[in-house]
Length: 629
Image (tube, rainbow, N blue to C red; front, side, top):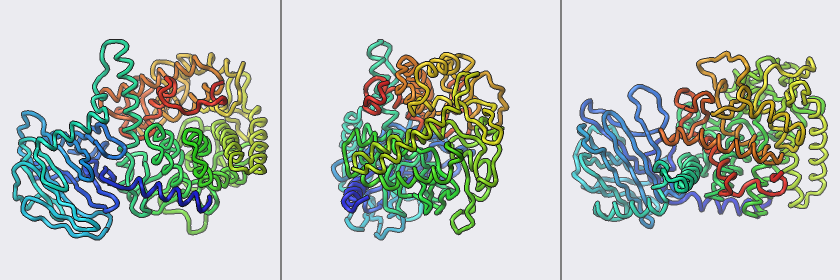
């Protein structure tokens, strides 16, 4: 990095963190004004039991929890829409910008019998200085600027709304308007909200039309919306480091993670998902993840608000691929300069610490220094911790692979890890060329060639596919996974080998084919299904995405189109039924809510839609000569 690149990044970060938006991870019904940190928290009170809902989240599974449907969300917060059902009450909350002001329209469901209040709590968040007072039917907040909050409707003086600090409470038997800055009528607020919704194209959330061409257009609009909303709803302000980040799930940030969690390869996928709509958000996700680098030089599996970092291991190296694609899309050389040092340090760490012979193994390294947090103790220097480094924690493909205590490695040359590492070397060498780092570029290309040559040992002629191979016995692993197609992404195994992998495995109904794709294990393998299983009989969006890139590079256009159609079918099923974007999906029936540990609004679920948009030419990513086969 250089002083100039860091200054450019800091300016971008400061520009993004301004205005009203859903910055607070604790509730989808909280709007925050940055940089002031003034929060407006919308809540509900019901009078059957006298209980209050102070914060709303999607995905809570406790008894009596609210049900949340997240609607359209503009990146800059200029329009958001949320529907919440709780304790017999259902409301739709729409917000919009009116210049520097915020307005909100809160609409109760028709014929609702439950007596209820809308509460609007006003406070300065994250220990920021400011004074908030209620003055009759308005609230005045005084910090770096003065902001007044008003509502329409009948105000209720109820002291038992379970809210800390000043708040307004309004009868919710009819539509309520909320505004900042000045008094606005309900009619004026409704007009502002309607205009913002139209500008965003919020109507694209309607089910597809029946006419063929219109249906295709509506389907494309849905995929655009999925990509946008997955990122915009999960982009938050992280106050400890004064930064905007996209996390995988708002719900995952609270509780044991202390306010936020940045997961390694998720952050780079988030950057690619942000790219079609927001260059700043794409850049922020990359740089902030790279800044989590450990003293040993690698990007950790996770960094979170408790202070935890996984000092024992990383996650698959997809950072250089991401940075190179963002550079090709946007052309900012300073972005390469800002990220290059961390990417190179990370690349060299893999070769220094995870190499066994001429290939890599996943691992988990014990640290006896002050680094590890108590949360990591059960996984450090353990089999499970090593599988976490692959991004496939606990997948049955590792069941027969022992953990080598002396080497701190799984005793197998991992086909997925080596494929992605070869691709990382290749992309990082291209970045080095742009920056004039000719010696480093040569080093990286030589390392890539070493790995690619050694990957010949991972080809299993008998089964016609690449497989991880054990370092202790020399045998291939007993089970297969979709990682066996990753070599195509690294430019390995094209031609006749690719033909065999596709015809004998990828496209077969008893392999990785079928209606709901891609299962992470072939369908013919025996299943030992566990109640908490993340992997058996599940399809994972990042897996589909990486396999799709491999098919593009191998020139397997028909198979790439097949995978795009299957990915569309998979993501739209839950989207049209529940407006969910899941962490993983059933590869048996296509649903996802059947698993309590499948997060219902997780960012990388939108990779399924990104595949479709790339396939149909709606998004320009990975379209240079290397990826055109």
